Amino acid sequence: MLEVQDLKTFYGKIQVLWGVSLQVQEGEIVAIVGPNGAGKTTLLNSILGLVRPTSGSVTFLGRRIDGLPSYAIAEQGISVVPESGRVFPDMNVRENLEMGAYYAWERRKEALAYVYQLFPRLKERERQLARTLSGGERQMLAIARALMSRPRLCLFDEPSYGLAPLMVREIFEIVQKIREQGVTVLLVEQNVRRALEIADRAYVLENGRICMEGECTELLESDHIRRAYLGM
Amino acid sequence: MNTRKNLRQIWLLGLTLIFLALLATLPLYAPTYTIILMTSILMYIVLTMSWALFSAPTGYISLAPAAFFGIGIYTSAILGTRLPLPAVILAGSLISFCLALLIGALTLRLRGIYFAMFTFGLVELIKNFWLWYEIQFTGTRGRFVIFVDNTTIYYVMLIILALLLLVTYLIRRSRFGLALRGIGECEEAAAHIGVHVNALKTATFAISAIFMGAAGAIMATRWTYVDPYVAFNPLYSFMSVLMAIFGGIGQPYGPILGAAIFAYLEEILITRFPYYYMLIFGIVLIVTVLYLPEGLIGLVANIRKRVAGGQDALA
Image (cartoon, rainbow over all chains, first blue to last red; front, side, top):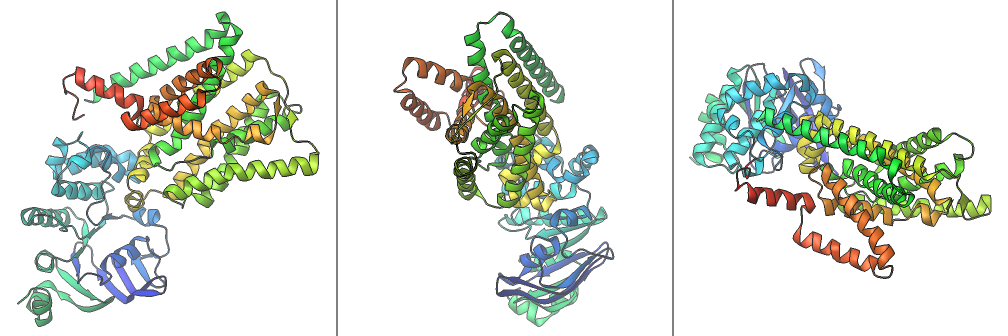
């Protein structure tokens, strides 16, 4: 479904990605894990068209999307839950959700019904300003907003960041639920254990390069992962 | 919840129509002085509302109203004798629109204070360029503008205001209105969602310039003589911002209220205290910023909340 080939991205003269390649099949949850500063967010931004890669290609459903502006990429059916949610603080929950349906505006009523059924708690808080929500609810709102456009592929940038452990579990359950709804998931995470537990396959990104990839069950067994990320 | 919102909308619409109808019949019985005063007030409402159309939701503080207003004034001064009045006003709007498109496309990547500074510089740039042009090529500094009677000016201004109200309403209830607010709150998230951020900002900036240009084109006919200092007076930019903040920019009627009260205040102060009026203005403004950060409508909302006993506190 999504294929990234030999992607190289620079910030000015500093090279962040050194030829990253990865694939996501329809219906999968694929995780990208790695330490701070490995280039995980840059990789997402390059896929989303927010940063222009210097070379390499990104193909989605057989079409090249690298070099397209970010709104055109969003229209292809890719949406994103940005780092720490980035909800619109002075809009209420419903307005935040409607923003998510920006280019599927005519179908926003159905989309609203769909996400309210997934997140009944948001329905209760429909009129509340996003700034008054708790961290977990905000993350939930960001996920629901990303689903409003009924995407085929949803990218998550550190959904567990800054949340209490119980909330982290809930968010990861939601991610699995979303996959069951037929949305393919590409998950960027620092919480390596949790990410590997729910994903099918994973890529380990270090210093802008993919250093390991494989089935999550295999990766959880590997010495490098156990030593560097799981503290065993 | 929804029906309550709809009721409120119908109520506001009805109120707006009644107001417009009252204003439309004003010249039938009011003295000329009132008509002239009301024209000034309407002009400030148009400038303030069109400023708020773009700047209020996006948070991009534009100091360019004087530039587009001045373009309208000069369009009128140059074309006034050659074209009928509606065509002149249309031309003023169009030229302002095109200029705003160009400027928006070039500068709306600038954020915060840089955008404000650029738009301020723009007014000075156009003023000085035009001064140079007039002296170099026409040999005079000012121009005479064709005479139009007061009632016509008043009606034209009222029509401009009615159209502006309509456009404001249409934008606010569309997805573009929501997206503009999204840009103001978190531009990056808006881009993530797939909003054509730069195109939307530029288009809205240009639409707001249409009304500033139109207002300039009709106002010029009242002044009969203009020069670049009068036409591109940065005070029009500042007034738009101040009146909007005074009224409150969270709701569309905030700028209307602010402009109406401020413009009337200006008239009283100029006639009664000509030497102190800027001073009193300044004090009113400082008090507003200190005690009414959300403007007059914020004050109204607070009082209502208190009267309602906090019922609407969460709404």
